[in-house]
Image (cartoon, rainbow, N blue to C red; front, side):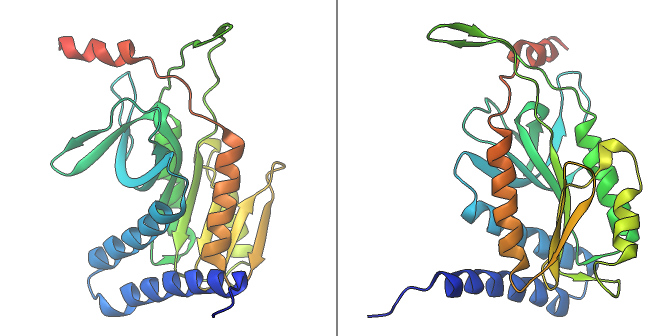
Length: 240
């Protein structure tokens, strides 16, 4: 009988992700094709391993004022309490209240891609989010403050040498507060995570994609549940 080994299981998960991202880089010549495959690899990872209360998909985010985000490669959103997810010709549109995290998925990290991801993340965080009082058995709780939306950049490789040197920290420090990146993974090198004081913990390791997944789950657990959406704020658009 085969003996189970947790370290080997986690190494197998990392190897699977890294192999798929490497194939996307080497087998697909067109940049758009490479990007689509990279997105699908990360979406598959999150779809398979995030708790079922969460879903992950490529999507655009909308608020009750009629504002839209840019299209986002990977949106992690609530599936348990989200009342509506719109689909139009295969494109998903998700209400801002339902969003937990957003990521861009690219082949390689560099200053341009960090700035691009910051712009995409900011386009989601700037959206308006409603929050209603929550009824419960003892009465009604105050409206919950919408949680911080996590943002990040997911890649296979880095254009920098070293991958996690001054060039990365300078790029992450640029931009405004709405675009700050909380988490990122370079699947062939390591991962990084923003601390509460604004500094970054940068980790070189042999299982970066798995480490990123675990850190993402830990941060999702800490953010609790999304606020109760005000459906009447969206319903006003039915009159147009």
